Image 1 (spheres, rainbow, N blue to C red):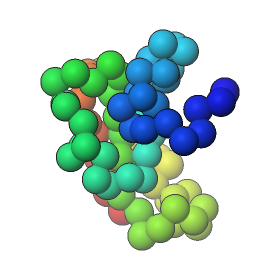
Image 2: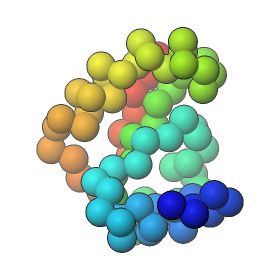
Image 3: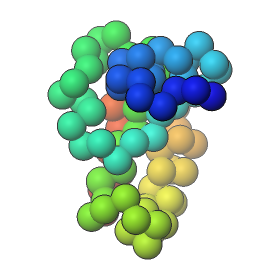
Length: 80
């Protein structure tokens, strides 16, 4: 997609323009770097010990649960 190196704000705008319905990240500082009133799509922050697969896989049901709900342009957290 050619988005490597994009800032979080640019990444959100690119994802929204490309038709993405939400952004999933492990960047726990994400919400402090964005103007939450201007989010173009919902953001799901996965709170994991690391971004290693073995730490993320147990959180997938929580992510699916969030994505299955009625999402608003807001920040959602999936704790470990």
